[in-house]
Amino acid sequence: MSFLFNNHKIPSAIIAQAKATIEENEGRTPTEDEVTEMLKLMYSLANISIEQVKKELDRKKKLQEFPKGFALDHGGTCKLCGKGTDLSDSWFDRYGIKCLACQKAMDTGLIPDRIFGKENSFYTDCDLEKHFNLKGKELGEWIKAGLIKARIIPNLNGKGKHFRLFLMSDNKGFLPPLKMLEEGKYEVSEIEGRKFTEYVYWYQQKDPLAYLKKYGIVKYLEIAEPEHEKLIKESPQQPEPEREIQVSYCAPCNYPAPLKDQKRLLKRKAKRKH
Ligand SMILES: [Zn+2]
Image 1 (cartoon, rainbow, N blue to C red):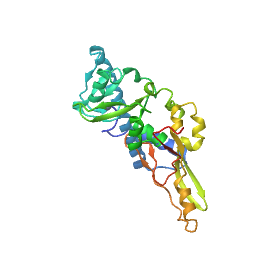
Image 2 (cartoon, rainbow, N blue to C red):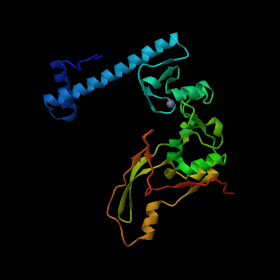
Image 3 (cartoon, rainbow, N blue to C red):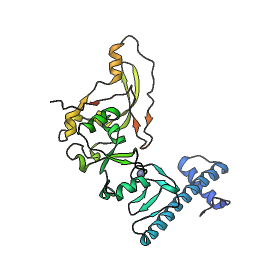
Image 4 (cartoon, rainbow, N blue to C red):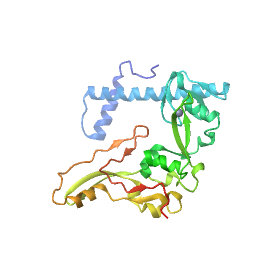
């Protein structure tokens, strides 16, 4: 359904008004084609928003009839695991859209429904990686050693792992509240004539061990030497040309992932340091 002018000619009065606004704000005169293209884009985005609001209202209305929820006739994004759902894998209830594996985990009590609507009530694998550089084998060792407790949601057929999360309530006193760990930022630094553009994580902006001293995790964290500083020490006579470090992004959460040659201030051990 199209609500606006998407498939029709845009009225000339609206084009003229948009043109005048650009002239006033940007001090230049846009072509009519440019203004028309811009307005078409705006209208198509507005149509998408209207469609989404309409769908949401329809779902809430249907929820009154089916308070425990209902299967959707379209896909969406699971509120819990963040994965895309399709026609055969979407459930909607008062907590939003969920894939059937996550829904089953909630129905069986594996995941408490209180985590919905409560901001930052759990860490994901992505959160542990981006905030503590903790992942893979080392994370597995932490879980095995009982340092951190994971809840594993199996696939719908009961086999394998669909998603894993680390509830704050299961890891009280060990993991800090997520809101303490600020988002990072990009910074350009120059070391001995070499320029580095890199993503600066929260733990590079403050003393992480002092900052987290109240939380159990701090006993298992160490500050590691940044890789590029080590590089300079090892080969001071051979400076590399100016370069930018390319940052990759985590697929589920779109957060910049640390690379091998980026600063890695934290590393961890599964065994207690003292
Ligand atoms: Zn899910």
